[in-house]
Image 1 (cartoon, helix red, strand yellow):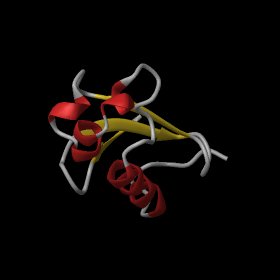
Image 2 (cartoon, rainbow, N blue to C red):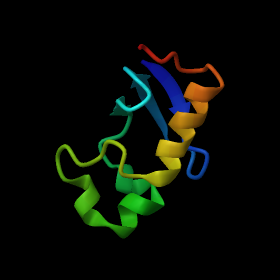
Image 3 (cartoon, helix red, strand yellow):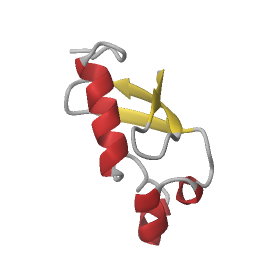
Image 4 (cartoon, rainbow, N blue to C red):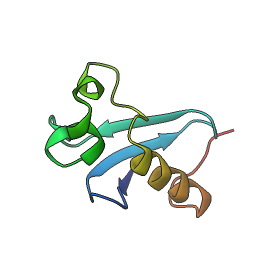
Length: 75
């Protein structure tokens, strides 16, 4: 897993791309709603299992990291 910072809020997560379609994310905070605007605005996103891929800005930051080679993509 590689460190990725969200381009919008700056939260740091660990991310891994098992393919272009599959992404694993490990949050470094138990409270993403404390830093992420999307989680703060939609409390349902903090339900167990719902955090991965729900924040559009974080998803875009991870995709950009994969495209520019900061995160390897297994195929």
